[in-house]
Image (cartoon, rainbow, N blue to C red; front, side, top):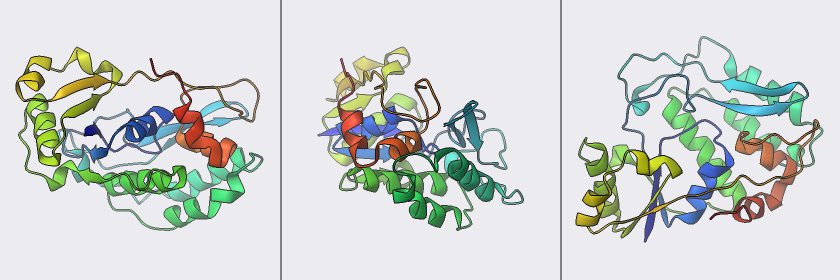
Amino acid sequence: MIVAVHQPQYLPWLGYFDKIRQSDFFCYLDTVQYKKNEWQNRNRIKTAGGWQWLTVPVKYSFGQKINRVPINNGVNWPRKHLQALRTNYTRSAYFSRYADQFEQVYDQEWASINDLNIHLVDLIRQILGLGDKPVLRASEMALRDEPNDRLIDICRTLGADTYLAGAGGANYMDLDRFNQGGIKVIFQKFEHPVYPQIFGAFQANMSIVDLLFNCGPDSLGVIAGAKTK
């Protein structure tokens, strides 16, 4: 069985969902330190003037774990994000197909970035046809703190014999320890596909919503058809 693990991110890019697609079980790594100015509270959408950040404001203290970071709801960010999606994707082929589902998310008040991110990823998994993939939060397991041991513990807890690592995993993982633990490590190698977009030349590495609103039911096929060497 193949397990993939990743921090919960806000409206992640295509490669995140390719990782879920290739795994038998996916774990949200929500017990590691929150990283400011990365992807845990923001992502990018395509606009007529280029790409634009959608950022969820958070009340972050240095050293906080992802599942402990509250959202700053003193700012009306849901209205801004929903309006940005409407403004930039109303003309796309499938925005109207999914708009209500996203509106329901933004109509709620979310206390934590962790819960918001996981809810959105789970929603998008359903839309893509990946809803039957078992998922779990790291915060629901008893894990060691050392990064390699933590991943090995996740694999053992879930009964996995293979760990699907991100492309950059080789730079920090101690592969000998995985070997000794009886866990095979394979690396994701995802080459971003080109798909139809509005607003001119193709722009890679946008949020998954860009693919969904432009390609609709074909979105998982676009991800699966990407070159994975």
